[in-house]
Each structure stands twice: as C-alpha cells, then as structure tokens.
Image (cartoon, rainbow, N blue to C red; front, side):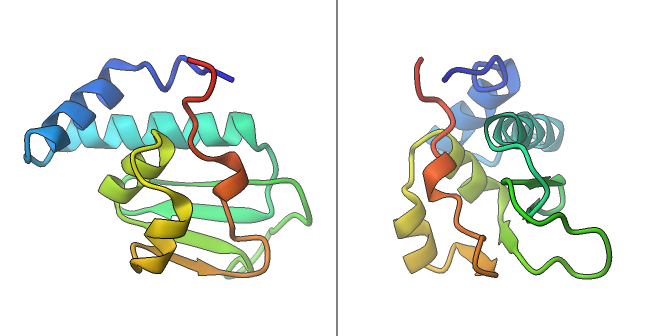
Length: 121
C-alpha cells in the first residue's frame, strides 16, 4: 500500500532535516506529521483509537467501538520525531514502546499492524 502522503515534500524535507541532526522547521514538521496521520486514517479507518502527536495533530483510527465523549479509552501519544520514524519505518513499534518513546493506554492502542505506512513503494 502506498500513499501520496508518504511521498509528500514535507515528509521528505522533515526526514532530511532529522538525518542532518536538525529539527525540521515548524511548518514543515507540522505538515509532515499531519500527512502521515492522514495516511494512517486511510490505512486503518475507524474511531476506536486516538493517536496524538502534540502539538501538531491528533486523529482517530482503527476499527472498533467508537469513542464520542471524554477521555478516549485507547490512546497513543508520541512526539513528532518518533511519529515520523515509526510511520516511515525508521523505528519499530516494539522498540519505540520499549524505549518509552510512545505512551499507550487501552487494549486497542497498538499500531504495530498498521506501521510503517510506506509499504508498497
């Protein structure tokens, strides 16, 4: 499965900055994070898990019981760099969780079956 979001200029630019040891420009970082979150919702549509990448975005995904009010029972929260690494296959889900780079709560809060997002390129 391939998505135009994975090949977006913002994703490429953000990854290049990270490769050079720099923090991507804020607008580029935001666009890259949001493009990859959109790709996740396309790959795993649903509303049972909320994925939060503060301060740039949050989405609901994964099939299952829909969440509508209050704090969601299934939440994944991570920083923008970790999200880019996971979404593009530069870091594994297991490693990110073990290293404490991902905060998860709830029985459905496991994105490993849906990452990385660049499969099929």
